[in-house]
Length: 383
Image (cartoon, rainbow, N blue to C red; front, side):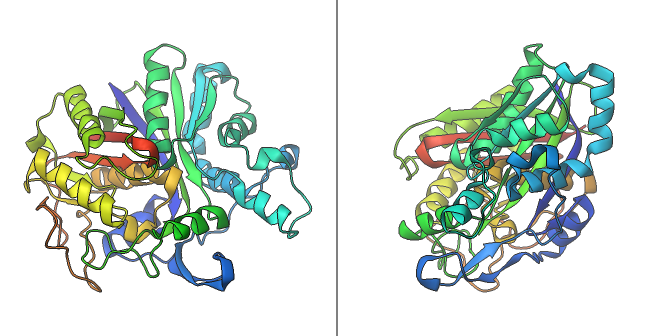
């Protein structure tokens, strides 16, 4: 069995476990706000921004200087003691780094092309850069690579890190991901008419698209027993459509069923489901149908993207970190926010939380469903 020995996180809810946990419990996200300067023509939009001051990239790694890597450094700083102990114990060649991203340092490339920056290197935006940067920063020589499968990227990074340890290629793994606000994805989703004009409202009748956020989270995986374990994982690729989910949610179902089977759990053993819940018309409709078909309305569930924004390639690990907080801090389950909207009564009943509730069973599931039919499901449990 694989365990999580340390977690670092920052997103629109705050920086660090204490701040994120406190704001998650209150349902308050300081970084979620309206902003301008991102969309073509000066059109305003909502974003989820990390408000914390970020550490500087060392001069020896100046070619990797990006906000994305600064987010990683901020998450790493929160677990640095545990990481250094692992390196000292197992050696630099036995610590793996597997990360997920969809933007990397794309914003730095955009600013260079726009004439807003003179200091640019392709490393800053290359998709493989986050893991290479973190491995170089820590002077590691073990396996290090980055996955980019859109919104499932960092969930898959966790799965891949676990596999490296299971295969004997590493003793511990630093897994996670980061994504940064950038004009290209914001305008891309806007061109798809999938960007909400206000803060996103998953599973509501008025939902009109996503709110994009930025964030990062890192986890240290180990075989040594810890309070929280990875009970099961599942992944699938239905390849139905470049951007739309399978109409019957077949790939999503397979990922969830695979995770349950690996964990040796029945659907009623799960205490909470963190839904992918992007607030697009199709995603919420299909996911509600999948959860209803597999779990009925017996398992409480909600999407937390109205509090973090959709952090794209970092979403899987950002939301897994929230699930870890729920398990380790005994937090009430976060309800879906319908304070400024109404629930979509046409969706299948899937157990959406309307008010905070205690976690009845110490097992939580987190879904990440991506473009191209890439699906991932993580099940964490407190032991």
